[in-house]
Image 1: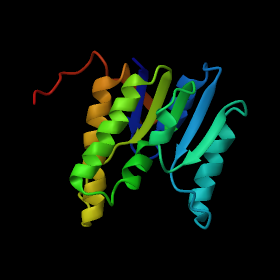
Image 2 (image 1 turned 60 degrees about the horizontal axis):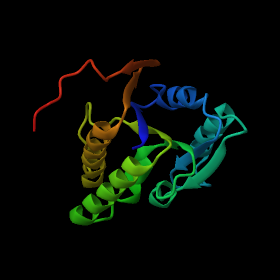
Image 3 (image 1 turned 180 degrees about the vertical axis):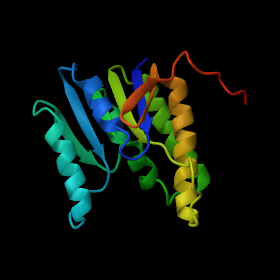
Image 4 (image 1 turned 90 degrees about the horizontal axis):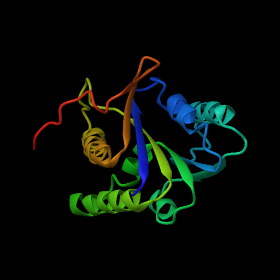
Length: 175
């Protein structure tokens, strides 16, 4: 069984920095930047540059939009930043096909032997999107986080530059 650590939080909450801190002791780590490249988006490129500047040069890097092939074969410890890229990559799928993608993701996460640190956005704490695709993203992310939390050894929430360990300080909501 794998050792999954989930770090979630809002925009600029410190989630990536905290995940990098947790991964700092790993000797053989692959950083998975899970998003499209967006070479013409200057603001996105600034964000990517900031993330790259914080990472040790010894970490391997995979930039991809497709997470599944990476977690199908254990290649050592992973830091996946972020789960939102998985959701974006599956937005065009119908509900049943998306559920199959999520179930495959959960299966491969469960059987991965090495440590996996997953960074994820938290959405839906305030405004509801006026766009169907925004609500679809929020709903699928929420469902994914709930399921990944169930199989994680550690669950962290970052807020305002602070990290809170959620394990052992919560009440499980009955189905």
